[in-house]
Image (cartoon, rainbow, N blue to C red; front, side, top):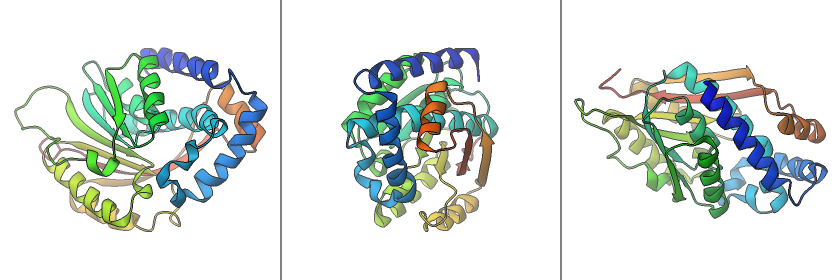
Length: 264
């Protein structure tokens, strides 16, 4: 991780601890994390309304446990798939902004990010994330399916950051109709010059639609990967994981990646 990203990460974690442990003890957050883990991991199909954010305890648990892990996992994946080239990123269903921040932080000078999420708390948290990292970023309420417009690409001879779209653990939360439309929009956006990265858990039981997306991305010249890695979460995340009986160090996931056809 670049040094400025590391400094931003440390500021971000310190800010998360200050805000989310102000009125709750670590024991209370760990208790909420156990409940959140059951919802977030075992019943992901019920998260379309962002039920993971419906109590202060769950919000704190998400911010202090899942968000740092999401940042570190995304940073690993982005580093493997694309070099440090400036991007103009749209993070659809951004959550707390961790995944988008991970990409943009190491993408190079001139990068920017727009985060969209339906939940007002997630939008506020994303703004705090961007501030902590010193990113050129804005966050606003919006639906992931509506945010993937067909005009996100650029001409072959156009200078500046490469347009990019990120969907980090959000496609599974959409209805079948919205997901079909979103897939078409993403393929069109890549054809127009946009980088597209889709991240989802390895579990196939919770994402029966995944093979259709794999075929579409591969047919468009993209790639499909599964990831298993060890990450180094901050102490607060490790402590919460131990208290909740979760493995904070091991991370898995699967991705679909589609680079702009003009620059492939």
